Length: 323
View 1 (cartoon, rainbow, N blue to C red):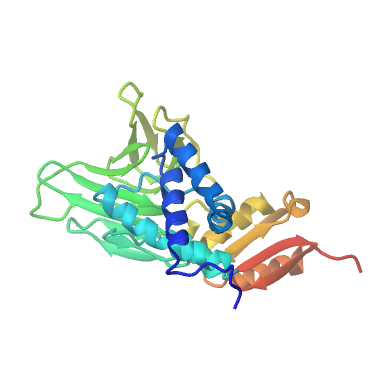
View 2 (view 1 turned 30 degrees about the vertical axis):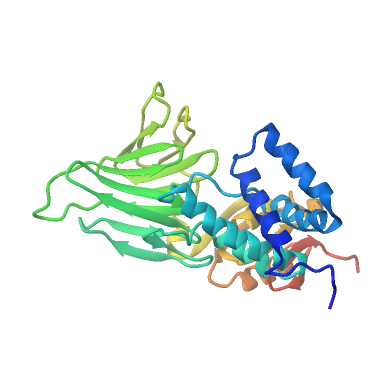
């Protein structure tokens, strides 16, 4: 056994996981950064544990924020457990580190949620239909004043309903960036760290960014818009296939390969990497996300690319070798 390999019961690994949570949750001031530097310098095993944690963060992105869990303390406890497992697994080269990292936010405590590669539909108390895309999570809060869906992660398709016998109340979807008010409609909402995208297929919605002085924008059927906490963009025509995911397919119309693979990776556990030399190749077609292996095989047959699988969970699409 390698004596330098981190163990799950190693207090140094526990400490590294805590430092990682604090750093990427924005809980460290200048004194905290000095304390982290001092801790890393105390012993070689401290630095090794930190490098494993830092590699995880740099490879897979920072700790997701703004998921709105009930309390900060409960969030930190869960993040710490998952980061601990992820740090240990990454240090030993196990691809499951990525799986733990990618799914921790969705599994916190959301009432409605899907795993990577899963889509699920729900009917709410008022008859509204809610379809969750891959890796998505939402909570529903209905009271006497309003009907509210809190989108924690991912993307949802909403078809608003009005069940007989229930009082008429406005219907909202809320993300980190603001609120979307349904005006009798069918629409999708996709949340992100910096912006939310809304696509309207029937009737209209009203966008209200979180900033108090932000202008509200009405988006009508056939339009989509991105908005941040501060402002909503100008509505534009919906992109082709914007709701195709609800039928389990991705539609590409001369899409950059790198962008296509980024979208496909949402339906596939693990890492799906696009090599820079093929990033700007263009792809068109309709692809079933239920079988991402077959999609990758199709790419290799129709484009000058090669799919290299280090494992099922670590895949690179690069240039095909000459000859």
